[in-house]
Image 1: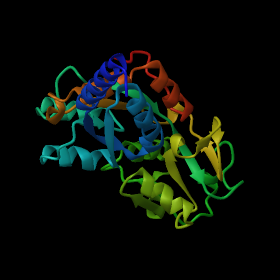
Image 2: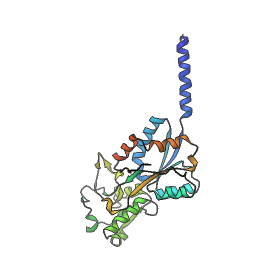
Image 3: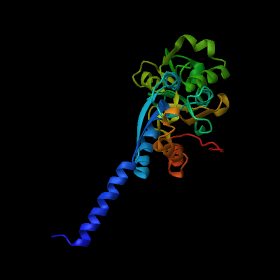
Length: 257
């Protein structure tokens, strides 16, 4: 038979475990496709640190913004830009004072073919390709950045007929990976491994060729009473998470609040 002391200990332990499970929550998160890999890793660490589950949906920021305006129950939004969270805040769909930049995006010109893209991106001017994939600029900020690069190089009209638009940045990468496009513009985070482009070939585009891609997070009205939602936003600012973000090739804003 168990001693009286052991019985009391087990009873207390059961209460603590029950309380822990009761406190654990869930947060519904809309995440820009470019941030899929780091966010999956962050969600695992978030679970370990807080007990909360982050249920993740990935897609184009523009589509998420429209869904949120039409009643989608997301509680936290990690956009690929600052404009959409700002607009959602102004229109009352997000909570004022909660928006902050969690990462600075890095654009890369990428091909699944090793050696296809040179270190200065001269392949764009040289031509010889039939299709150039980019995320749809109407939906994805990285698509806007891609157009900025083409404009800065004086290539907009020259490649206009060769553009293949992905609904989001993941689809743009898929077009390139499957050979439907020889090359295209995507996020460095999608192909980085051990601090460099892990497969194929690519050109890390100088940041002076496109406007800064400030990726903002915001608490949505649906999450205002959910402790797990605020916990996730706080966790995104932690040292552990910032290290993960940098590992995937993103820059960190000097002012993270």
